[in-house]
Image 1 (cartoon, helix red, strand yellow):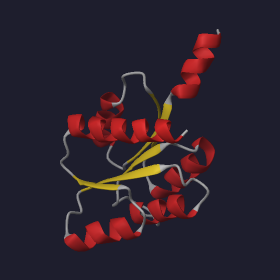
Image 2 (image 1 turned 90 degrees about the vertical axis):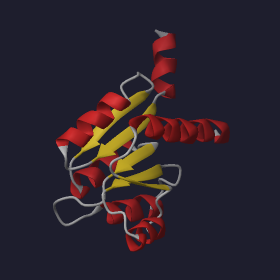
Image 3 (image 1 turned 120 degrees about the horizontal axis):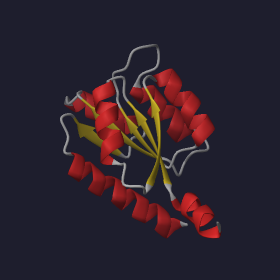
Image 4 (image 1 turned 30 degrees about the vertical axis):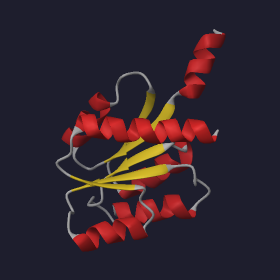
Length: 136
């Protein structure tokens, strides 16, 4: 029983935020290796609720979503809150230079345009996790 408790504590909490169910499914499958505790949201409002409840280590965040709150605003909320150890990876179809700059201005740690390589994303997330473990 003690080993199970230790395993649960070392899982990285990963929040997937995207309005497209296919992207959420792809990301869920990509990170289904057992090293991650996965959570999902399909818009900005759900994302904010999940962030406050789950306190994820990493958020994979779309920019363009239905509703009043876009990914830039969610990122800004994360970075201006007490979740400073939470890393944000923006995954978006918005690939213009202005969009990239807006993503950085909102506090994104990494900005990736769609389509993306799942294997490259795994490598990026694993590097973030390794750095987070070194800091703890």
